[in-house]
Amino acid sequence: MANPFEFIQQVRSEASKVIWPTRRETLITTGMVLLMVVFASLFFVSIDGALRYLVGLVLGIGRHG
Image 1 (tube, rainbow, N blue to C red):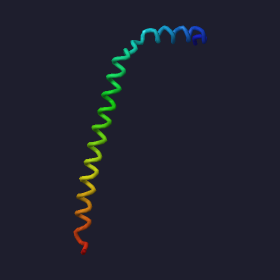
Image 2 (image 1 turned 180 degrees about the vertical axis):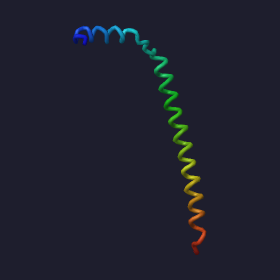
Image 3 (image 1 turned 90 degrees about the vertical axis):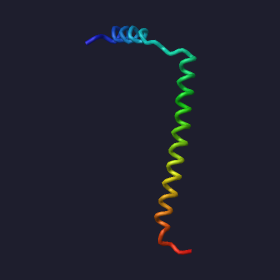
Image 4 (image 1 turned 90 degrees about the horizontal axis):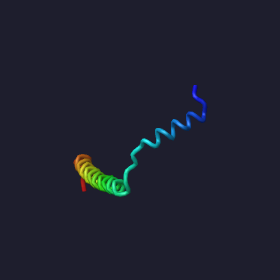
């Protein structure tokens, strides 16, 4: 088992190998995620409205007035 000092050195060594995204890459990725969230929200709202309408038609068949 490695001692704590050696462990911290290994963690720092591995962390230095990480390639961090640039500011531009981060902004583009964030924009794409937000755009997909908007599209998914619109899709699910429209599907929900269509299903609500269809269920209302089916359940409203036997009603009078």
